[in-house]
Length: 445
Ligand code: UGA
Image (cartoon, rainbow, N blue to C red; front, side, top):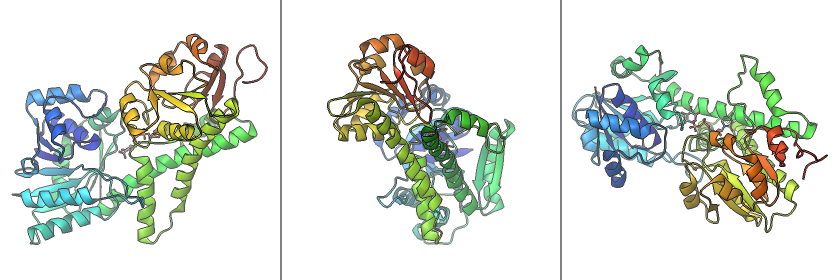
């Protein structure tokens, strides 16, 4: 089938790659000309495992092309995906101006029957607004252009794996012909075992927000438990294991730490709450989820304070700056939220990340960056592990203990083996778990 994709960011580019990889003919467009030129040369605009390898293969096979002109993606297409950004407004609502702009361009360029699929995460009611925009632009009630909701469930860092082998594909549509087009499009994925779920449009739109909000709720729940464990002297990891042993609860997304970041959960939570308010429903549980998430960073600041006393003149090394491992994305990263608070209290902050160092340096004034974890740790009074990159498991702890100013480590992701860290001479502070004093001492630093 012929597919157009408007917007080649994290969602759009992965959509291009996964659909081209199963044999569809895909045209990706973006308003950013530099991005399009780089993509044509095989360079992805962000780090995502295997993205450039698949991009290169699709470009060579010739079934994926990139263009700056929307009309190239829309003319003759069976399906056009809207994957443009929906950044938060200062009020927290999603700014849908780019979605409207994309809808207008589709309306002008459509030259035959077409399904327009909204993939960007949007509030319920957006598909209807897209349809109304298309009707206004074309100045006719036109049934040849159908709008469907087809939210994505990709996770950054494993986006291609998720796109190639989705556990579910969600399509919300208003007519059988539109469902039929989407069934044909996704047939290769269903053949591989993906479950295609068909709903009405409002349900699909709501379900996407509902999933993200629920996952964020699980994280905040376990972080609230971490605060309880810290006060009661319990171990949140053991509590989460007990909870996770109940299949009705499940262990996934019960990892306590600095909380959730990234370009999905933080903005989707607030947008979902705002949508509730617009609809006349006070969904204040979501505000509480956000509050507990902010408190998780404060809890780390408190641990650093407790270990170092005053922060003025202290040097803090952050291991990991991306909002999660496997990506160079630092948007709404908890590591940067922590850095900001530490800087505000007079500490100097130096960060290292396997892939996100440059993005982090550009995003936060005052943050120093280092080429390696060891360089960051040199003369630091405290190391804080902020992102659970696998390479941090391989660190030479003895070497680290020798080069730091004070051997204090705060594990913001409960990721390292605490007794091993302490055996190397560090005081080990975890989130929601008792601290461990360095080997050979009775209490922590
Ligand atoms: C999330 C969802 O998991 C995807 O299903 C969804 O498609 C995507 O948002 C989206 O809406 O586009 P993503 O933001 O890539 O994916 O990252 P997650 O793996 O969900 O992690 C989000 C944050 O939660 C990270 O900062 C991570 O460190 C944190 N987290 C995750 C925890 O603090 N604890 C956990 O137990 C799990």
